Length: 89
Length: 417
Ligand SMILES: Cc1cc2nc3c(=O)[nH]c(=O)nc-3n(C[C@H](O)[C@H](O)[C@H](O)COP(=O)(O)OP(=O)(O)OC[C@H]3O[C@@H](n4cnc5c(N)ncnc54)[C@H](O)[C@@H]3O)c2cc1C
Ligand SMILES: [Zn+2]
Image (cartoon, rainbow over all chains, first blue to last red; front, side, top):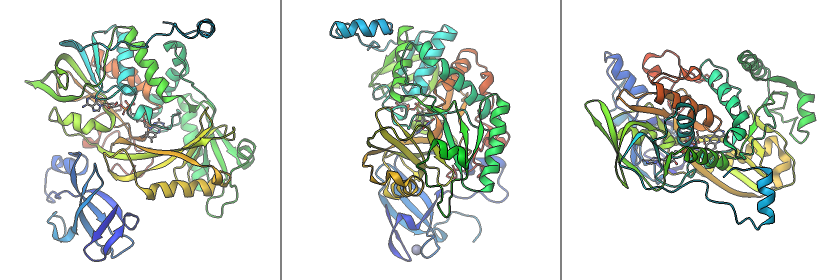
């Protein structure tokens, strides 16, 4: 797998750490149930998913990567900071 | 048809013409007491123990492909009872006891080989962790011995003892650990279930689960509607998708794990050897192939094939720890889809929908669990109470934070196991 980092261009999978599902973060005052869903529960579809990838051996940016988990095709990669996942700005 | 030495001799002398198929190929009936989704090791074992221990025989096991074509036929065949957290500890101990009597019980040669398993440590911290684990194993009533460097050298003189970063300092030896022939385990359970009247239905994909007023009614399949009083999930890497058919979301992500085998070689490795250095582990099959693997690829996948970085990592580990194998030729590599939970431990529980049961989250360790899982799941399905050895495999442990079983101590989060 190769990912096109918006800062660095196309790079090998080895340069990245994969954090997992890119989900909209609940607000700080959200009920426990919302946090349980956010941290543990997953849709886990066999198709396109959005994930957080960290360009550890490159520019150090967190990316929101859309990837097909059946074909391993990387569909898109944008900066996570601009993709409205909530949490600290 | 019973297997025996006498029978083998007789068939040998008469051209092996008397062997018959090991199970029927029945048409699905309209209705069953229990429908099991998934004809892997766990689904087949569940059907077997439901019939044998609970007298429930009006059962169908629905398999979308062929019996044993999933992970039960893709794993690296390691069987052990060396876990150390309450919950896992008693369960894998129970499963090991079932393994030890399995071939007699099934009248089937599963090539169970308790050749001993060595977990190698490379530094003081790892040794302390092994001591702690060993004590937990002994307290559970299973076996563990701490070996020093000489103990390992005697058993595996070909290891690289002097690696600069990961010198071999010793090992925790689990003598009752070993391997079993994975396909034969599936076939043995399939035959045992079939003999007791269970319908094994292949090429039958479940496409929907019917729920009315909070109670399960049956399933939709590629071979028509099948009604059932109870429906039991055993779909391993597809658990998330099958559960979604009943409107459930699970604490599960599907990941790919790879494995490798070399060409057949003369006997060199007697034990199963696992290295704390890199999660890498290796054993030699009875055919002579060296079977090994290491980590997950660490990204979600339904592809049943991995990528090169993990191939490379595994080969590097082999070369670092067992350099003598550098000239062995790799024959094949493959991948299987694992249902990973946040704490790396399984779930055997009610689903919250009446009559629908969950057996999932076996991650990369579910082969050794096969008899124990089938046995405990059958108990839950038949009695609606958890089996004594599987009381902690709760679905709600992630919500409550109580009773998490994080053997690796890395945290109960996805993608850390
Ligand atoms: C490379 C690799 C190495 C491993 N090594 C080890 C090891 O050394 N030791 C160990 O203990 N464990 C190991 N494991 C883990 C172990 O193989 C699994 O945890 C275990 O096999 C899972 O249970 P199962 O046998 O029931 O799964 P499977 O055999 O995968 O059974 C699930 C079945 O469900 C069927 N199914 C799915 N969806 C549907 C549907 N909609 N309708 C009908 N049928 C459906 C599938 O076709 C499949 O046959 C390894 C796994 C892999 C991939
Ligand atoms: Zn970058």
